[in-house]
Length: 205
Image 1 (spheres, rainbow, N blue to C red):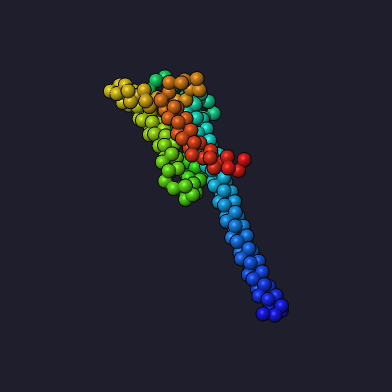
Image 2: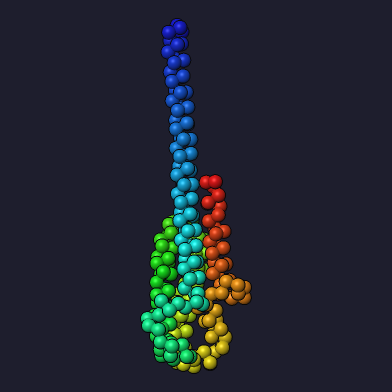
């Protein structure tokens, strides 16, 4: 075999090796790029859901504040605060409706991030977010029950003291009260979500 023939064969081999090397490098590059994009998407989704979770937590806290300002009232009528009666029920219905509006806004934002997170991580994250979502529904029901009790002039709660206690715990938030069962449930729900999101947030640190 002549030198030109050998050289031609060696050249073809080298070209083949170079092409194969380029293909391997390209595949590895694509995989690395894909992982980077996936990691970035997961980080952004985790960050968005975390912020939406905290916003919802804070809106629940504000809604349950025991401090009622005159500016929150439809009109100031001292008779409305003399005990359970129609006037008091109307005032609280007005207050609760306005206080719950930011909660609904926070829930809408929270739900949009939950959908994104579920698409990335499946139903496991949904089972965690559902716990906080349930707290929102329970607070809404508790406020309705509190208003109904005031309309009945306190008769609704007289027949079920445990239900009355649970309702009052849900509609009122006291920062220093470590025994409030509903407040504990909200904190636990937030912590459960944090536990699912933290690994995704740490990956970009």
